[in-house]
Amino acid sequence: MIYVTSVNGEQIEPLTQFNNFKMEQEVNGAFSVSFTSFNLNNPAHSILHEESVITVDGYDFNVKQLKENRTSKNIVGVSTFFDLNDKRRDEIYGGTHTFNEFMSFVLDGSGWSFTFDNDINHHKMIPNFGEANVIALVNVLCSTFQCEYEIRPNNQVHFAHAIGGDNDAQYRYKHNIKALHKNVDTTKLKTFIKGYGANGLMVSYTSPNASIFGVREADPISDDSLTESDTLLEKLKSELIDYPEAFFELDAVELTDKGLGERVWLIYDPLKIEFQTRVLSQTKEFRAGKLVTTKVILGNTLPKSTDDLLVSQKVEIDENRKEYRSRFEQTNDRITIEVEEVKGSIAQLEIKADEINLSVNNRITDEMATINIKADNINLSVNNRITNEVSTINQRADQIELKVKKNESNVSTLTIQAGQIESRVSNLDGRMGNAESRITQTDNRITLETRGDNLISSINVAPYGVTVNADKINLNGAVIASGSITGHSTLNIATDATVGNNLYLGRGIGDKSLVFNNSNRINASGYGMDLNAQQITLSSSDITIGTSSYSRTGFNGTVDFSYANVLGVALAHSQGIGISYSGGYLYVKVNGSTVGSVKLT
Image 1 (spheres, helix red, strand yellow):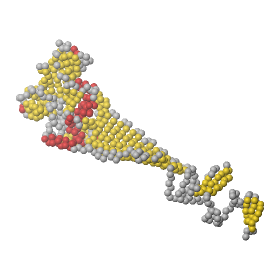
Image 2 (cartoon, helix red, strand yellow):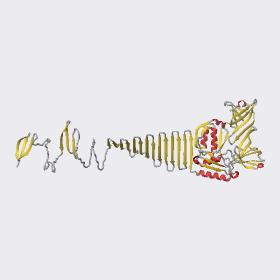
Image 3 (cartoon, rainbow, N blue to C red):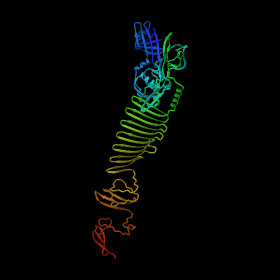
Image 4 (cartoon, rainbow, N blue to C red):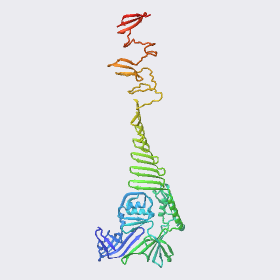
């Protein structure tokens, strides 16, 4: 039964009065119906207009040609699959993808589904794929993957290298062939071709049929998008027509069980024909209310000799042993190029409008190097995932940073800026304690700093001085200081301290002391604001003056108290009690006046 759906889709009616119905389908995808509808007891006739939909056995056709008179309409309808000619894919999905990936992109949201033979679902590289209508993109894929398609019921399309089966069927003269017309065309026959790809790549191909028809050179093919010889060779073979194009139109019996594209044997003794061909076109008509095949057109396939089959087998073996493969992927916002050594290294280049990523990954040693480039930043890194070591270089317009780290804890960095250079080594392992050392250099300062166990030590070198901060400062060896040494800290010397000239204790008000063995000491006490009014106190159980071994006897030295008042000791010219010696007499004086004398004998 045939049904017609109105243009607006609101009305569906059966087509009951028609004749000369033909449904023609070809292996190149063409699929159409034609018939004459009559305006007599025919519900669908009134809604049969241009762009109406005709449904036959699950196939939908749009009316594209209509010739009408008072009583009839001559109709030509084309499969609604070709309405996808009006649906565009403006995105870019170029590069290296499988047939399934490409076709999923093309038919997404179209209302059509697809199936395919697995032998065409390999990777192919197509640059700039997209920005065209769906049918144009389908044709590009069929050319690239060397396949053809068959439109099937319920909005499904099937893809295969060659649709149809090979059931070893025969069309034989005087058996199931009524009439046959042979058409042969060698106009396009060529047996030799050259191809040119990118980077000076050149490949030539000579067909085995050159031994039959001689060397006939076709125009060369140039394609700068092809970078591999096997891909270019495949393109040459697909473009070269190296056999006579032969078509046989025949009327035959037993046609209904032969599918479109099916390989069949044609045996026709009057023309001495005997070879395998295929059904290139079918014409179906309604007979007794059923669609049956009434006419077929057979055409030749590429003949393959035994040598050709061996070559094909050798190519498949080589492909299985192939150690390298490459991939090119392109979308509107990204281009990805990838070269892989199977089970080994893989290199990838990804280009975006604002970013370029380059990486090389050795999957055997588990090492990876990457470069990331942006307008304001370049980052280089090398990562060894076995040893957990990573080194990076990060470059901006105002800074370069070099970093090496291991196990996320030991980190060394060098940061370079226009006015500063800083190097840093850190151990961030909490189990062992956190520690860090740092050197910072500017045009007027160098700072060395270490941190650990909540302590910080630093050396700051500047034109106006050098500052050392530390809990402890250890100086090993001779220390020579030219100039003053000042400070507010305790100086602890384990052995000797030699002073060349004067040793000053204090420059202000308050007590000052020299302490011996934490007990004996010499104290200097100041009086008020007069820095010169001071008193010296010697605190010790024994005081020795001179070289005697005992403090109060055996005095051999000279003590001059002429310029000082000494408490507890009287001088001849001092106030209070004094003693003096002259002419053998020891004189006792009080307030400078002699009060008595003792003659010494």
